[in-house]
Length: 108
Image (cartoon, rainbow, N blue to C red; front, side, top):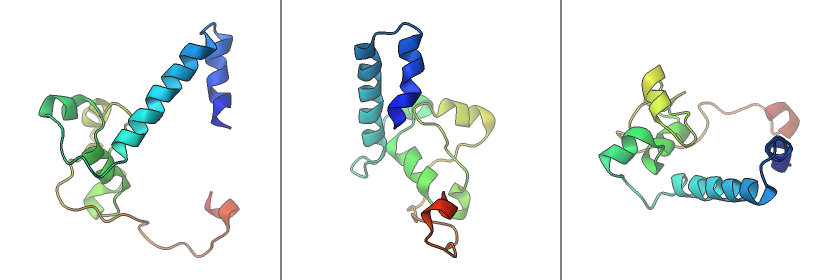
């Protein structure tokens, strides 16, 4: 159902094929940032863009990684607003604490 969020772009006059092209590029980039195959990127790239290293820290439950690195594509805004942290130690993925239910509606 996420295609509903892209309808306003078509209503504003963008051609549907270009909207789908932009969506495809973003989906490819999201695959890129969720990989563990890439350790570090060049410093100039890591300064501006969200990289796999930054995104791993975003998903970590290590205390220094909680509520950090929110940028989906650009990390520069996290640097500006103080929510940036570099990946310094191995990331422990998961939840901070277990939830008392498996009810998907309550969890969501």
